Length: 460
Ligand code: ADP
Image 1 (tube, helix red, strand yellow):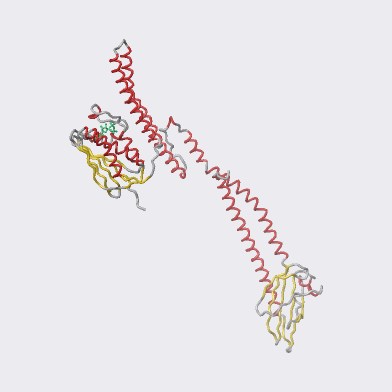
Image 2 (image 1 turned 120 degrees about the horizontal axis):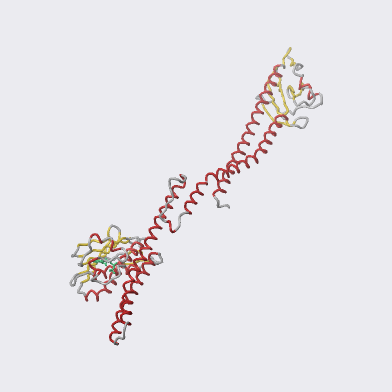
């Protein structure tokens, strides 16, 4: 469940909505508190100013006459509205709301700037207090006015309660909304999945309609189509391989059956039996050879071809290959030469030996008597390059690509020289598995030049 996109989206959506809502609630609470306190402070400031204006000097004596403010809430005992006047630290006047119950406001040192404090009032409830001191007739007069915060705290409490009640509702609404939105948004994925489901091994030619899917899924649909192309190509290659392979095996099988049928049709002399068995053995050997190559190609195709990665000196490989072919070359009066430098690549020594064995074998096989095979190992533009040039029959321009296809054998050599047509397809597979490439240049009647490029081993 935790790996589901839907779950993750809803969880993120819920988390973000909750954080935003709680943040908004806390922010608004503080803003509301500030506004309420500012309003009270402003009111208390006016009260202090009013009371201060009623403190007068008469004949050098201070006179405090607050009868006109000792009315309304100030007159009711513990009403939550209080004032108090001090001269030189001594309380000289209190609002009836205080004096009637014998209470007073707490006194701190004189302050010539207006000071606002939250204190505990005589009825143990919070009070907002404003006090301001000034000099008058040589005395320090301090005026204090206070107002209960009961209503303000009630307002803030109800705001907090509303937020607390709304929070679960917002949570539930966000969860439901998030679920609906994700379900709606991911519907495209279901449509895409249904289209993909329709593709089977029989309908690999079908493609997912990129136009019809959601914008975000277009790259996925395009990659899926590319994968289908590759699969189709792979299946097609496999199919062609099967049909080519069966075709190749049909001839020796027919030969064997033919010899068996003809030989068994009547009584034969031991000499005739021996000849028939020899022919059958040749055909069986050819079948075994073809089957061996087919298996090799199949292994390469399936990538079971374990390409080991070791340091391989191409000059050493070529020396071994040349040694291997000295006998067959001499038999055909073909001269082999090897030149160049020691160049290292990373790769599989046996597989690379197989590559050059195939190329040099062909260079000798398709050569003319008295011809030559010149091999060179060089570094070319940061790559290792092995060139095998022969003086053979050459390859027609239209066949230069096809000789790397499985079972392809050129028109002019097919009837004259024995072979399977698989060697160069194996060469190409191994070289490409090493990250390299094979090129061929050729002039009909003059010779061919095979070039194998491989990535050079990087010096650490
Ligand atoms: P095989 O040699 O068993 O037929 P390959 O895959 O090695 O199979 O070669 C495919 C074909 O390419 C050969 O049948 C031949 O016609 C052509 N070919 C390969 N190498 C040469 C060469 N050096 N000179 C001329 N033709 C060549």
